[in-house]
Image (cartoon, rainbow, N blue to C red; front, side, top):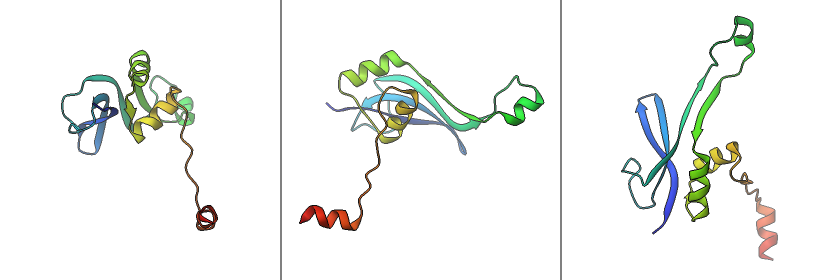
Amino acid sequence: MVVKIRLSRFGNRHQPFYNIVVAQARSARDSKPLEVIGTYSPIPKIPTGLSETEAKIAKPFKDIALDRSRTKYWLGVGAQPSEPVWRLLSLVGLVEPRLGKMRTKNTAENAIQ
C-alpha cells in the first residue's frame, strides 16, 4: 500500500486552491484522502493592513498552511511526497531541496566509456 502526499485541486477556474493531502497512490486526484494536512494557495496575495508606502514596497506572498507534526509523521512512516509537494516542503524546511540533475551529452558519453 503506497501512500503519497500530493495536491488536490479546489477553487474556481483561474483561481486554484489546493489541499495538501495524504492519499493512496492509485486513487484519483480529487478522491477522498486519508488525511488533509494543509492548504496551498498559488495566487500571490498582497499583505493587508499596511500603509500606502509599505504596501508599494511589500512583496506579494503565496499562502502555505501546513500541519508540521502530521507531515513529519507521514514522512516518518514512509509516505512519498509528489514533486510539487516536495518543493513546498522544502520551502517550509521539512525536507532538503532536491538538486536538479545537470547532464550534458559529453558527461553521458564519458559515463558509458
